[in-house]
Image (tube, rainbow, N blue to C red; front, side, top):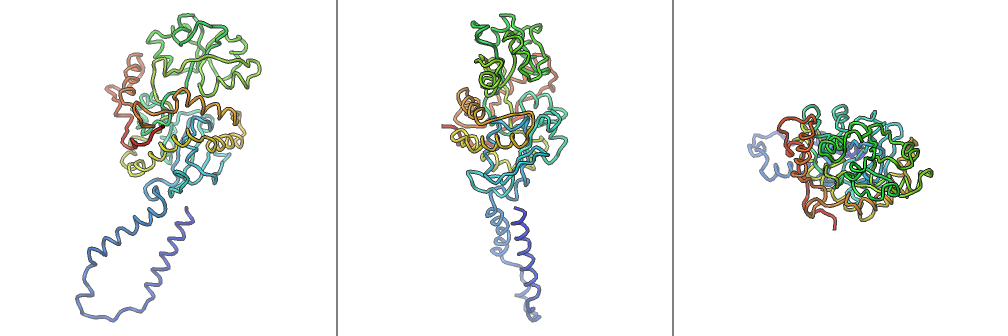
Length: 398
């Protein structure tokens, strides 16, 4: 892209040089030669730059180049809509933990690049919403509904699309140990200890709503299966529906059995996880870009659901090149997309449109967090943190 721009600049300079060296016309007092350009000439001059930008790609000149997207973790199939925007000509930066390349829409160049940045340890385990206020070159970041609510004062964001319709987070348990448990509420009634990461909004809400007693919640989970295995499935723990069920049955040899689970979403907290958000103050500046870009990301969700192999291959390759503690293979990627489709994690909104945000649903989460006594900005409304302004309602999963 930079090479194209340099060639255009060089061509323009040569034309100006030639024009300056041409034999000047004789001086005359004919007033016709001093007349202002016609309306048609002015229109042509105005339209030329727009036509050049359009020829370079639909995002050229209106979007940052590259479009930088900050994720919340290592590459995984839940992020696949972003990697679907890349073609074969991508680069993996193992030092910065970023994947970049020309941003494509339906395989066609858009005129800008895209850079997908890894989260988790790559940004000191900081939430993307906070990283967006550290690195101002980030265009979009993954922002969950509860993070946007908590950040409404200090790190205000606006979600402009939801690549995932449902939050993949789950609470899982051993079906052999607890054959009568079917829901998270059943775990509460059965007195089962639930091992979770500290600080999870869903736990505060579930305790507030009586779904789980506070004394059954153990916030010491560190992501390791060690305690689960050591206790032989006596505890319940959090995870991702599109990852842990496969890993525990097929990868963790000390367990090697199925697990049962319920989505946090289905248990009553319907927040959007990994929504694409912008800094609230950037809305007007990014509006021309988002009007074109967001429908492209919507279509990327649809394209990935129909044919996930390309994006999955990039994800697996990037993780392998990063060579960190996070491991991701083809089988897990294939399981993940299948489970995302089966459970409706990838899916249309309340209508036939993919990626749109249900404001009533968002307001419901705000109300639940307020009722749980969490720190929520006074009088915060869903429209303060989400918008469907850039959604193309004609794009959806079949």
